[in-house]
Amino acid sequence: MTLLITGGASGIGAATAHLAASRGHKVAINYRSRDQQARKIVADIEAKGGKAVALPGDVVREADIRGLFDAAEKALGPVTHLVNSAGIGLNSSVKDFDAAALERLFAVNTIGVILCCREAARRMSTRNGGKGGVVVNVSSMAGTIGGRPGAAAYASSKAAVDSFTMGFAKELATEGIRAVSLRPGMIETEMTEKTLSDRETRSAIESTIAMGRVGQAGEIANAVVWLLSDEASFISGVTLDASGGGFVFGKR
Image 1 (cartoon, helix red, strand yellow):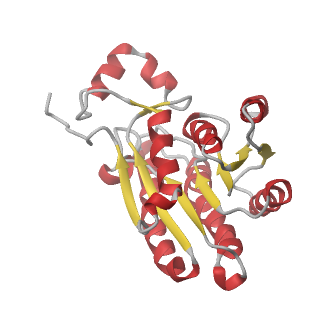
Image 2 (cartoon, one colour):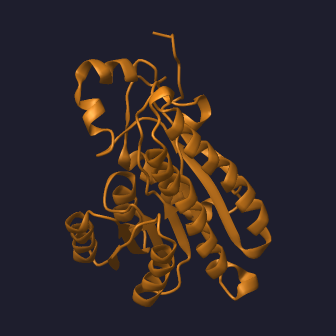
Image 3 (tube, helix red, strand yellow):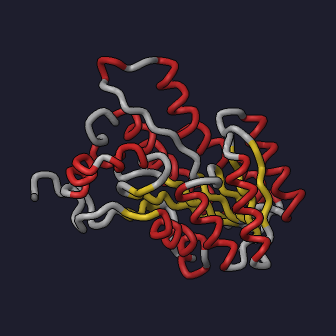
């Protein structure tokens, strides 16, 4: 089993890489700028007897995406599992939107995911000679409510992923490919570190989560790796919320 993880050098992607390797996956860890972090994850996996490789590439570049799949296959064998974890945020009011920032946001969070799915489909499809496979797209609960204040654009980019994943899964269902959109709530990662470091802000956020706390990357990795497994063999074309019970605005 060869698993390619975009954005695999940090946060949910990194946690997934470690867990998946412990479950027998050969792991290709894609990163854009976190070279040292990616190589450390590879070293840690190999030290435990697993197989992994770090692969640089920017998911906004179509050529890089094709290259990622080629490099992963060359190093570890045909890609059978894909986790699209690469993503960026954008905190801006609608009145202050910048076109270039919006283009970058959707290029990474939406178009990059779609193109990675395209490459997976071409290579995994049993009609194309592949052995089938599983795709997990990491979305966000933000897409269900339009996001927290200032995150409307980010939420939109993730809502598009949810819709695409459903269509993608239906189209490829008879070609041996499953696809699921996983929607984490607020998770403690490098991307949210600055926001959550402020005690008052963290408390306010946690007051809107049913469980009363933010999640950890490892908790999301558990869900991802389960979805990749044969235990989830009849699950496809759906969204799974990993959100601590969901939003409860005004409850507390």
